[in-house]
Length: 320
Image (cartoon, rainbow, N blue to C red; front, side, top):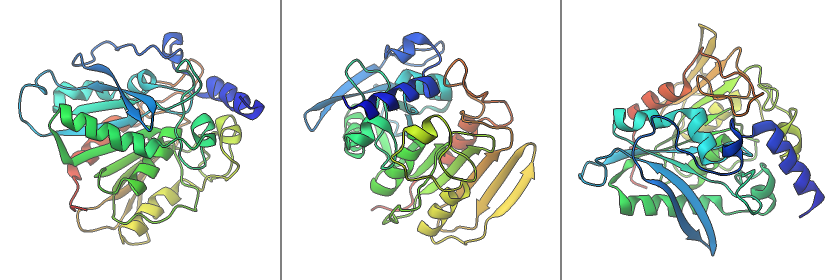
C-alpha cells in the first residue's frame, strides 16, 4: 500500500472514526431499538464482495405494501454501524413503515476505514476508482427482489464523504433517487449536469472546519483525504441542483432559531433547500457524534426528521 494511502487512512481514523471501538473495527452491531432482524447482506460487484445492512418493518416480507427506501451512506473512515448510530434513521423504520439501508464503503482488508469514491474524495475508494455507483445500483436491485420497494420513493443521504457520494448518485443514477440529502458534504464545481432533476435538501454547519462553509480545503480529512481539488462554498450545492431543475437562481433565505434556511424557487414537483446550522460543526445535526472527540451534533435541528419530511413530500415525478 502506498505511503500516501496509509497517511489518508490514518487521518480518516482520527477524524471520522466510529463512536465506539467495536464499530470502528467493522463489527456491525445492532443498536438498541433497531427494528427487524434483516441485518447484513453481501453481493458481488465486478468480482468484489460488497456489503450492506437492511432495517425493515417486521411485516415487510409478508405484505405487498410498496415501501419507501432510504439509503444512508457513512462518512469517510466509518461503516454501516457508524451511519446507523449517527443518523438515528432506524427509529423511523417501524414508525413510518420504511426500509432503511446502510451500505459499507470499501477499504483495506479487515473492513476498517471505509470510504466512497465521490470523484475528488476520499481515500482508498477514490484512489482505486472503486465503482460505488455500480455497487449502489446493484444493491437497489437486490433489495427490490427481497422487498416491495416503491421505485418512486428511493432516497439517498450521507455524511461528509457519504454526502459527497449522495451528490454523485443524484447525478449518475438518474433513474433511482427521487431526492438526496447530503449532510456536511460539498460539490467541487466541475460536476456535469444530470440528465434529469432531483430534489435536494442539504445540511451544513457554519463552524465546520473540515468542510468549511466558505469552501476550500479544511483541516483533518478536509486537507488530506481529497485529491487536492477544493470544495466549493456550501451554498453552491443548492445552486447546482437548482440549475439542474431549472429553478430560479435567487434563493429566499430565512434566519431563525440558529439556522439559516435557503429555498430556491422551483416547480414541477422538484424542491431545493439548504440548512446552515450556525453553531454546527462537522456532525450530523441532532444525531450522534461520529467519534468520541468529534464535533457536537447539537439540538438546534434534527436533520433526520427534517429530511424525512422533505423526502415524503417529494417522490419521483418522472419515469426516466
